[in-house]
Image 1 (cartoon, one colour):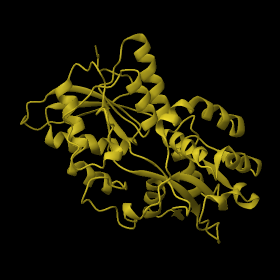
Image 2: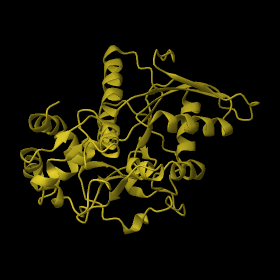
Image 3: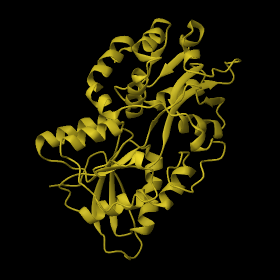
Image 4: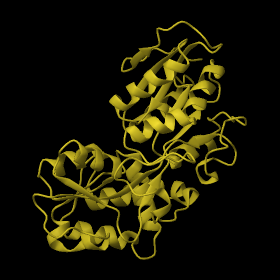
Length: 326
């Protein structure tokens, strides 16, 4: 079923002597940044040296477009999907495209990140808040509402749900909140806010001083700050949207054992420690967040209904494009 040879893949193979039964090749479709994914595969291969991992990496929207095209053609190349979008995972699940992994090691995960039908599993917590350039901004914003004034909105850039899975979740969450809704986005647009593409376009614009303010996932802002960029991140007072970067096995994979091994590793303490080192909030009990991050328990997370978000996804994208282009 799977050919495993993709023109845009990154091939990273373990070279150590085999010590596990699992072997062969799996292809992972992911939205995780390339350098981070290289580190993930290298660490995975330390434990599973006989499994070769090929990676197709792009934004969530492009990953899903490619996957849906392959599904339609009956020629799916992916064995595992790791994307920052539980809504897209729910869509794949509803299409019958995800393998039920009833024995996945979820005992240390909060129930909120585990699909009740055991088809996909959160691997980390990613929140969306506000980034600002400290060279350009004197009065830091403290809330989502602070972004709506003309003097702030006119300098605001945000990721687009037409490109970013995290933005799909963020916009979908915000429009479900009675105090925000589409009125909030209309106010931002009317006052001059713009949309880039993915979160990378936001941090680049703010770190370079092209825009003083941005809406962004926290680890990109905090990693940029740690690397010396003149930026600060704000967890808005009203709360943050959140995503869990779920991992799932594609139904019909021809290397189920290796795919399960990859999921097992993603849900392990070793993977959680690595994700913390990469700047992510952990979801594993007992693993501390990165230095400078608040405790997960202290975060105010905006409630969202993923099923309703999936149903409204196309309408949300159309409405966003009408306001900000696409």
